[in-house]
Image (cartoon, rainbow, N blue to C red; front, side, top):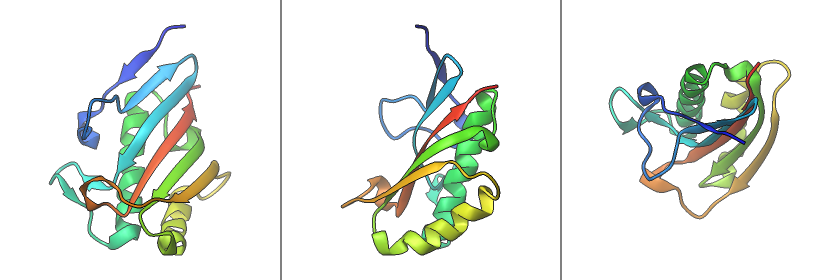
Length: 127
């Protein structure tokens, strides 16, 4: 099976040796994305809410480069540095996935790179 590597520099650059996304068949697998504003290279303002919105914006940009959109997301895994941020993250997440939200798993982790509060990985279907 072939795979297509997706790179969307306008969504920021990876912090390690990995692809932002890989397409295999009609599935798009996105690496965990960060809430960093690609224009400034800085962590988004607004705490976990601001970072969540920025992560989802970056995911949308990567999906566009892959020929899809945020509406094509079928599953997300959310990593929270502080599980007590769950309500704020979930509220921000709900403003993007307003109808037919994807399946989601949320886990608390000990730490995230760059001092981030949240990272989200996604799987989408390319029509």
